Amino acid sequence: MLDLALAAILLLSSCSDNESLEAGKFKCVFDALEWGNGTTTYVIGHKSPDTDAVCSAITYAYLMKALGYQCEARVAGKLNNETKMVLERFGIEVPEVMDNADGERMIMTDHSELLQAIEGMDKARILQIIDHHALGSAVTSAPLYCRIMPVGSTCSVVYTSFKDYGVTIGKDMAGLMLSALLSDTNNMTSTTTTAVDRMMYAELLPLSGITDTESYYREMSDSLASYSGMTDEEIFFSDYKDYGTESVGKDIGVAVVNSLDEAAQASLRNRMAKFMPTALEKRKREMVFAMIINKTDNYTDIIYYGNGAKETAEKAFGTSDKDYIRCEGQLSRKNDFIPAISKALTEMTNTLDIEKSSSLASATKSGIVGELTD
Image 1 (cartoon, rainbow, N blue to C red):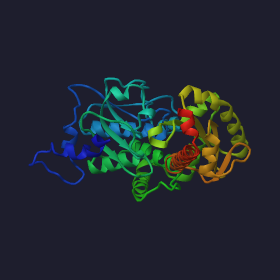
Image 2: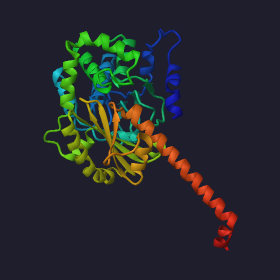
Image 3: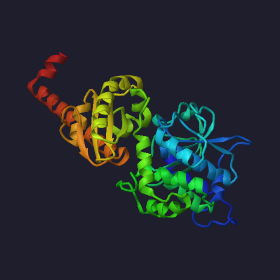
Image 4: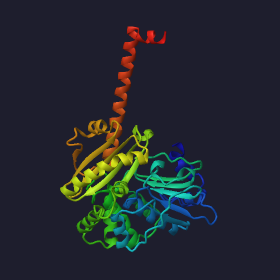
């Protein structure tokens, strides 16, 4: 993790003293990266790609190319219907799918956790990480450029990079970044929305050509919640992330599924609950969870599977009602769900350790341990 924390400082040392070091415009930092002679660097988001993962890869690849670097966007899997709609709206072709990064030069967007990355990322030459999540497990042997900000979307981070480097934002790039922002912040209503996001929204809205944000966001939501023709597995993994013991306390997986009415909500709860044992086995997790979000009536149902999953969910979010927990509002996986689950797992582990220590002390005092070891 030290590599990532010191990356910017190490790279800045490569800037010549006589170069302009205007704040935020250290292009010499990029020049210092090991791009390779005539080699393409691939820009890619996480597995089970959502709109922010895809749009951040496309727009950041565009920015790097505008600055003179040979970059191409890739996607880490099949796109959801919302992302397809956004790309079609702005006339952008779907990038090629990439499933292995072994030996390639890579830029990671919207993730820095290897569990969420395509295969071989641990053997890739990672040149940059552009993200808005907590720092993950990606470690590099050479300095890299790392730009992580506590904002509503990764495209918000990309937007600040466009501004810093003076690259013009056209209608298509504005549309993609704005769409990703709307998607990740639930139309600017999420608690993750920041002043940077609002500034970005105000600038990109007229550039994008979108005249009715509410109508456009409803179209996005309708597309996102449209699972017509999809299997239960495809729905469950359409917006899914793995988390490891080192980050949350257990090996868990968390899916996000969306509905627009109570009938669809109940149907999706039942379908996802039936698939969760298979998901647990497929992804080799200790627990799996699904957040079923009703985007019309603004609530989230949490379902769970695995040893201790129910107890963990109840400790984090309250008592279950008919095998699920209903929470007010559209919970954020990043800001609401993962922090609460991680805290619950930590507290439960600490309680178990105390109980074990107490039992051992009692056994020692009564002479049981001595008898067992004689």
